[in-house]
Image (cartoon, rainbow, N blue to C red; front, side, top):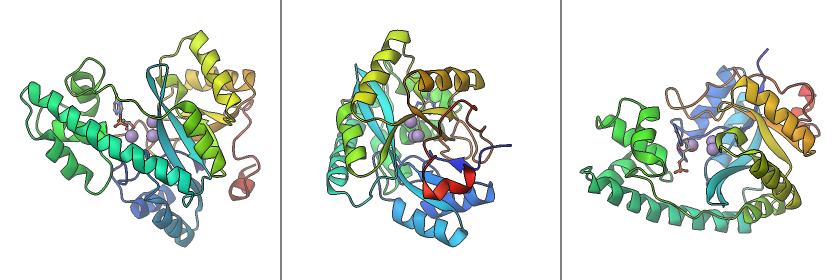
Length: 283
Ligand code: AMP
Ligand code: MN
Ligand code: MN
Ligand code: MN
């Protein structure tokens, strides 16, 4: 049986394909009962998503996915049950989005150096009113025939050492966890299997994260393999962290996983939603 809770996905407020209300309708159609919207560095979709969820009969969790720089790596920290009106959180994310625009201009400069013109304008057109992410550049580059799909385009242009990559400084791990916690939320390390951390760095990260008040890690996510579910279930247990689960759905054709078909948490995990009213029928 697939899980009926999904605590990680994106709308077109960040780099997803669907508008928040369409994303909630999609989740409903796919059998999701408890949904968190976790756009990158932006809370702008939460109000309309919550309203739609209430109309459609889903339980809704306010969320966000914050980009962080830790030991020269980019990590993603998901905040769940955050307060979308919290001033400190809103201001910090306003600041992140401003810096994202500057970074996007630098990405376009890098691409221009290899003969790809007007990518800033092209990516911006795809993003619409939403923030600018590498995903928008990826879509622009694919649409213009520079690679055959999203996966290939990242490899060719958008990762370290490639022309569209900018080594950006995001907020610190401490700041992200503190902002999430102080707005009443729970902090979760997103897709820990994607950072290519060795044993020592995993140990350091889990300790540091916990010392700031971090709550959980994503054990089951669209970007983990089933053997990583087991690996990170062990790590959560070892470091006394709770576990979270989410598809990281962005839209058909551009995400690791569709909604509504993700596995449940391994038995030994302590679910982050254990004492949430919204998820009582699940526990
Ligand atoms: P940014 O936050 O602007 O660096 O954009 C990162 C986003 O790009 C992630 O949230 C994913 O949606 C997407 N992404 C990053 N790496 C890849 C990849 N290798 N393949 C597909 N999508 C990726
Ligand atoms: Mn994304
Ligand atoms: Mn992420
Ligand atoms: Mn995500």
